[in-house]
Amino acid sequence: MAPLSPRVVVKVDLKKKPWQQDQPLHNRWHPEIPPVAEVKAGEFFRVEMIDAMGGVIKDNDSASDIKNLVLTTTHHLSGPIRVVDEEGVAAKAGDLLAVEICNLGPLPGDEWGFTGSFDRENGGGFLTDHFPCATKAIWYFEGIYAYSPQIPGVRFPGLTHPGVIGTAPSNELLRIWNDRERQLEESGVESLTLCEVVHQRPLACLPTTKGCLLGNIEEGTPEWERIANEAARTIPGRENGGNCDIKNLSRGSKIYLPVFVEGANLSTGDMHFSQGDGEISFCGAIEMSGFLELKYITNKFSRLCILRCSCICAAYYKQF
Image (tube, rainbow, N blue to C red; front, side, top):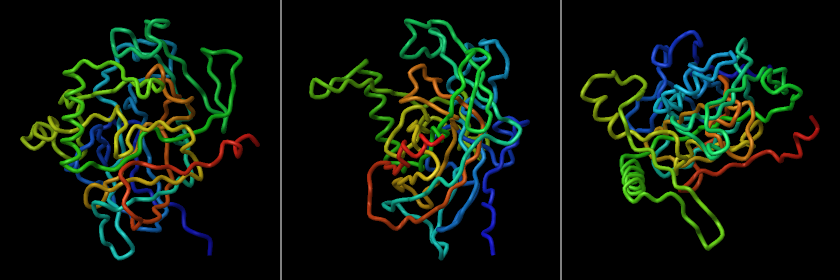
């Protein structure tokens, strides 16, 4: 008998706002955001997601939506998803969660995306000195190819991947993040040089209640206020994976994520039709809504402290 289609564990309605979804989305990391679904080891499942900006960017020539974007709302994530083994026992702190990307792509009927550069006065980017004003390009998809009316003569095959995928932090790890990033903000450190060779720009995004979405936790309650003031933003990549933006994290890749809380609480979002080596304009991928079809392999490996990935060799894609 042919295997069953993947079970849809998170479904989205593109006509609804992020907080109106039947399984409300979230845009923060916190151990107390309740899971909206559960998967078992060996299960083949599907996760749908809206674009990172929450559907506010429109298919038109105006960049005003990029210019006026409320940046504290990104990224809109689907999940959390609780993971258990074959006997129904939840993953525990110290386990290693392994999932395989079996398939991914844009949602049917929504085969378009956008690239933008943020305005100097609203987020900016690494190229702000060259492009101080907000810009936007719309891309339309034809299978593996994309083209843009704003960039005539360009058509290329994309390498689709999730920009964000990660597990929930523990309370201890969340405290470490907030202390570390608060220290960065207070010290005013803008760049670091390691061994006189590697240059880094530390990124700190401290908790804020502005634009905060916490899934099924009701806004305005004392619980929501407490968690919103603690929850980590999703912009920096951290020890839980998170905003990794690895362009080769596509079909056939395996992702190994550390587990910090019972059930792991896996979340994903920020789908990219394609991206270069990083996002130098901070909105430099082709952002889109989309789906991931994953296979949860196991959570019984040895301990690991950070995300690791096993990606299909780029040579595989040269055949296209």
